[in-house]
Amino acid sequence: MEEKIDILLATYNGEKYLKEQLDSILNQTYKNIRIIISDDCSKDTTPEILKEYQKKDDRIELHIQKNNLGVVKNIEFLLKQVKSPYYMLADQDDYWLPEKAEKSLEKLKEEKADLVFGDLEVVDKNLNTMYSSFNDYMLLTRKINKYINSYKVNYLYNCITGCTVLAKKETIEKIIPLPTNSKRVLHDHWIGLMVALNGKLAYVPEKYIRYRQHGNNEVGTEKISHGFKKLKQVRDWFIDVKLGIFETYVKNNERFPEELQKLNNEAYKYFKMIEKKKNFNFRNWKTFHKLYKTEKFMYYIENFFIMNMPLIARGMFNIRYCVLKLMGKR
Image 1 (cartoon, helix red, strand yellow):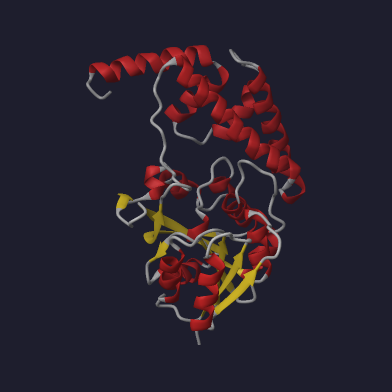
Image 2: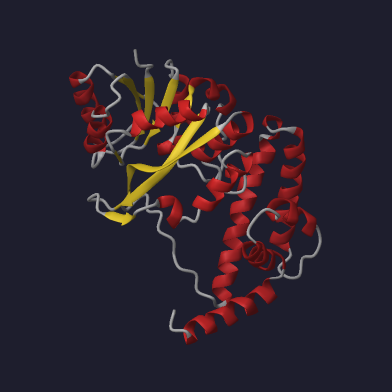
């Protein structure tokens, strides 16, 4: 008999695309599923839609929250409801292809992994393809392939999209409590990192989700111009992201191995230092090297200059901009 999978769906004001997502989950080729839904005080017709579907299919377990939990605590609530050997995460506005659950479980068992995640097809609100591969578009594929068997797959970057995840129930004790009040470490980032530190990951390159982009969740990236003002914005944003990540790590340091606890503290102090020092920061460059030494050479060089020597980086960016303009690529 098929082992049961709990599919966790957190909802909030999701009436527009919710029926399409629920239909796609209920129509999975893998039938032994329970859909655990927690609605976080929606103000639209989401609760009515959920109650309607619950009446039609007894595989739906519905929780309507009386007080607003917020995204993180709502997902944590769902994780605590898991009873089956496996669980999956779902968003309220995507569309699952019929074989998603079946193929994800096959891959997890084949690789003897604790968590499996995958790629996505990025689509618009009408399910028309925008980008055939989310991970290629976000420049994550190389990092995933290189670090799949290392915590580094989710240490410096978030390479795991939560709605692609299938994991063993046993991973939950390592994941919760989820960090709260973190601007830069979202639940999928934390889940991927904690499982990578304590278990094994596997990757499914096929796309079994149509990852819908609309007004409130677009992932499109703005092209970076190469003027000084824009470079400063890029640098400030980059430092803000890293500070947010390592601040969260430091606050949860007891959940990391000892060697990473030291690196977390060191990295946080490093990014605080370069946040204050605007130019020529040769101090503590060894910390940068520890974090980025395994990256591609050009990525290493560009990031080193942007963070540590922004005046030189400005010149490099402006030269490259002029060259590209002469070549007709701008």
